[in-house]
Image (cartoon, rainbow, N blue to C red; front, side, top):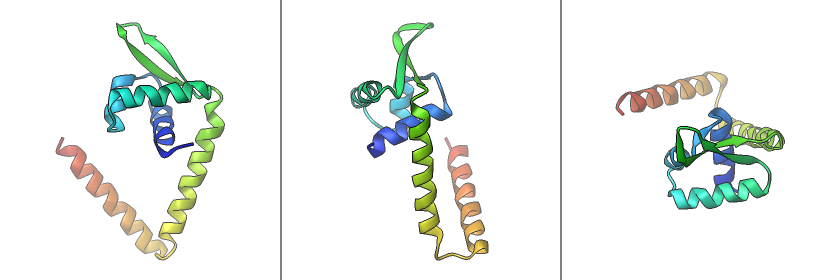
Amino acid sequence: MTLAEAKALKYVARQQGVRQVELADKLEIQPITLARLIDQLEKLHLVERRADPSDRRAYLIYLTKHADEHIAAIDNVSKQVITAAMSGLTANQSAQFIASLQTIRNTLLAEK
């Protein structure tokens, strides 16, 4: 699985029924690139497109039951990477670092 596929799956897992155009925007990729990515994920039976009842030109993206195992694997790898990256920090340093990142994120989101 590619990083782009993993990112798309994780986003759809957090927001089932996301519009395809919104997903492209959130992943910061072109809609045509996302269309190909979704095509690949559909071939793997991990997502499905459903027509948007409010806009016949748009599609909503949903995970299939087959995606659960992949989501768990992505979460596992993410935890391993974070653990390795933070291994040189004390528990207090880790907590401070995470709190700082959350403050930065909240500040950036508030500026939108």
